[in-house]
Amino acid sequence: MKRHILVDGVRLNVYTATIDHTKPYIVFLHDSLGCITLWRNFPDILAQAAQCNVMVYDRQGYGESDAFTIIERHNDYLEKEAQTLDSLLAMLAIDVAILFGHSDGGSIALLTAAMFPERIKAVITEGAHVFVEDITLNGIRAAVEAYATTNLKEKLFKYHGDNVDGLFRAWTETWLSDRFRSWNIEKYLPNITCPVLVLQGENDEFGSTKQVSAIAEQVSGRAQQCLIPAVGHSPHKENPEQTLEPVIRFLQSLQS
Image (tube, rainbow, N blue to C red; front, side, top):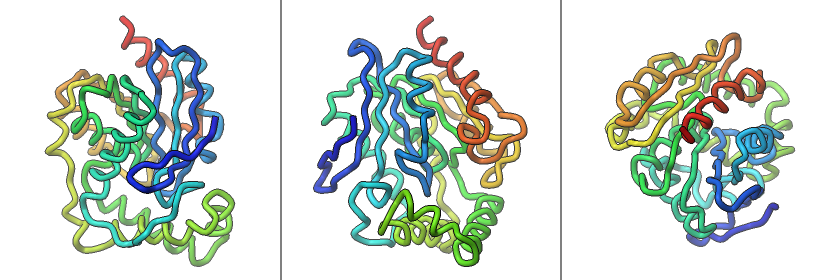
């Protein structure tokens, strides 16, 4: 079911599917250019395989949620997104959540688990960042070039409509700014006590395996690392079957 929910004065587009009220929700957090639709059927396939409920939402400025009121972001914008997620979970009466976050969404998942541990049962990250790397900035510069010279804007417009310029500028101008070069959320990792699965594509064009090691080695809970062979920054799109395997094993381990 899709609906709009007002959180702190902002309309967020939210999709939920409930299989069993006694089971936890897997909450999907999209990347810097993502939205509900761009997850395709991956959330529903995983929810069915794991027999869990599912919640997916568009953050402000994305998909069918309200547009950004300002484009400029500060270095704590992801912490603010974690606070918004906690508010949204409370409004939906989701007391136990498993977070699956891709890229920026993975960073938000980690921050939420660190800041609101009582609500988060486990975290799965995919291509998450906890500090800035040159490979990330080079990937973003390539995206800026593609936005200006190819049909990338047209493709994104199909999913984000009039939000598209705002979300693209918010992502690229923030990450490529001088002030953001010092961004680092590693200090939060020891506060994460729940189990964590750290996924990354072997050929991720936006981050190195240093991100994977930093997360897995610094969280306080049980951590597993998994490199998905022959894929880049979006394993769940590039090879969903191969991505589902370690995720389902991880989710099964939470029940033992």
